[in-house]
Image (cartoon, rainbow, N blue to C red):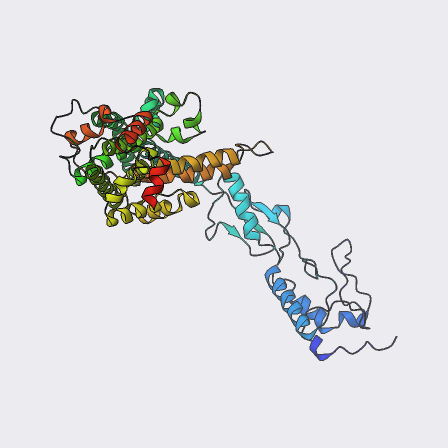
Length: 505
């Protein structure tokens, strides 16, 4: 037999050499093992090889050193460009395992040969978490061992205490979440409890039961007490009483007339009345196009009241103009109502701005050419400015921009948002083809209602004046459409074709 081939110098420092298709070096250590777990050695020079002696020296130093040597070997071969055709997570030499008799009682052996690719501690933690019922068990020093040939975990005497602590933490977190939901519900959607006495009684019962728990934290007890106080406060009845007071001011004083009231007084009480009605609208009236149903008077009474008041104010403005017997008087009335509309604009009451400008667009007022000729140029320019602000062009683009720029309180024109909600309802189904709730549609509806509720939550600091309000609500001053047009024809009759031609020449 010839002499063994020469080993390159850069291979002399490695612990083992893997097979390569182009090398003539025979396999130093075969992966096949006999019954006793020893590698077969077919050549004498292999037993005398320095690599073999190096493995024998390190054989009893533990699996940690072998793993580190293997990693160094692979790193060295990768730097030298030697291809690695086979990787094994096991060491090249057999690692003796502890016998069953060597394991202490109560010890769980998790592995008999450690791997550099898998952390033994993660398996230990997972096993301990499974047996202790905790997914977040923290492993401290001494709870497991990775020295030697195996990894093990000992039973912890305080697992019951850890489980108890975890249950207390979960219970505290759940209580805090429930209280947070109830707090948001009772403050943002209080009308749910005002309209449903059974729901309110159940929530009160739940809160009282929670407060009777001796283990309840002081902060949780305080939060539950605040929620009960919110439920006990009859804010809904106060809002209804306020609305009833404004809409039923009693008999109007004879001295309160359009001529005796200032533009500022009219604008303030218009704003207060419109905002009070607007704030009384509960959010459920905005759902499912309730204002367009046959039973809209019962499903959306507050929205119907808003629409009714809009038409009444618009007709009141037109009635005051045509009721003036002279042309200068009618021109003066137009100028005064224009001033009222401009003050409402400054107070962010865009609903009243549209009410007044709509009256000017009424055919009974629009046709009064002689009256409009007497209106000042400045007033005409202001009227055009206000009409452009509340124009429906671009889906009320100008009004939307003003609303988004202004700071509450404000009174938006409700028709803008009702149009948006109707468009969303008609444009998408409530459920998808898979039978699931169409959350995309629900988010769009919620976005519109959230903006409306934002405007409802900030009140005006305007003192209620029953004298002015009684004038604004006086139905005796309001003429219907037919009476308005008849009065318009009476004060400014139609011109004959010959008369209009002669006046034009």
